[in-house]
Length: 566
View (cartoon, rainbow, N blue to C red):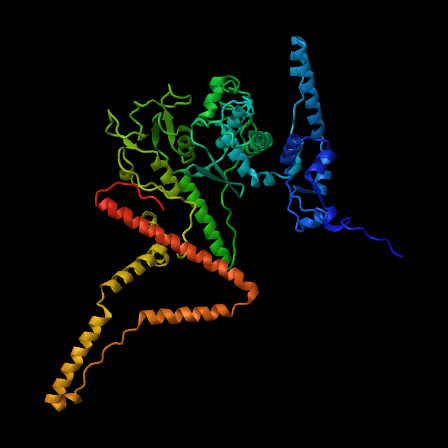
């Protein structure tokens, strides 16, 4: 007789472990277990058959893979958690006993958490780190705007601020509103930067979990910044001067020098024995139409990047104190322009407001007094819109006190049936692009055509009037034939037969219904989802067109009320 196999002792039931059992196996609290999972990148899994994994029970649990928990059991940072608990007990006991000297000694000898080995383990190559850089940048920029609290130590915002500024010194980006996007070694990295305002504390967010993420991301950003600086020949950590080791080199030890580096308006030191050649596109003798087209596309991309890098070349731009200084400085310097501001307001100013060579001044006020004649006063949106359009836009729409045009999102790509704003079409025409196909396929044109058809149908006479007129014409024709029988033999030009629109639509609808009946059952659900998405898109397009029409009518009537969505 063979061995009797017991239930739930093989297969999927042995591949998962509940969180409570994992805590007992590792000997950790729930807080430390969550922190360890965040650092190591371990997340819970949803079993396919919950009843088998739960051994027939119906209790809802959080499940992890057994191999992941075994992987966590060998992590050396678990010992650091235990040492930190011992440190807290010793420190608390010394404070209760009034041993001040012992408390200070214990405090300064506290265990320090290091995550270098975890970063190297999770990202074996530098390209792996670049692919996962989006979340790290977003989190670091967020924490750089936070203030000190119980869960956020004072060193954390300063460290995040330093790391983000170091990264912005390296990267050249295409700004997209408050979103930034950079192409780093072939990887597209997108992150979001909060506004320059203090973020209030909220009890809806568990900051202890957020700090666990930021602890790991700070270590990761340090590695990434070091590697990026070395790739372009810059000294790390960033310093101000000519060359490393020269007398003009100033390291960022005091607060004034650090603030100058944070201003993003200073040139950083390069390595002494590091010479980098400018990258250029190699040309090889190739054959075939496909290779020629690929090479032409690469050359066009290189030229467009070069144009964008010199977009503000020759411009000296002065920033007023009410505009977002850091974002504008970042964009202007990336595009080849010179920028400055009031030296009383911030470090790093290059020229004063009274400089006669200033070409543009960025102002975010309704009016400004004492305007200089040979200077253009613009609003901040002009800088961002020019970078998004990759060309210099007319400044007349961005003067001080002028109502700004809509800020279009460069992330959107128009597809067939989508609503295309009129401002987007005008911008494409200004860039010299062909918009005829876009007008034919855009959703607003379809909706306008349907609206015009409805209006024309409403203006047509009713069916009763048409019948009465046709009856009168028949009676008059019979009377003429009765008077003169030869008129019955007259030949008249034929009348073009008008198709019945409603009948044609009904036939198309019936034909579509018959085709839908022929769809196999396994594909019918996918087809229904596609049709639902198309109907929802068409509904949104109609809604936007109607809203646009309402806004234009209100503007024509002089009514400035805001149209809200239902």
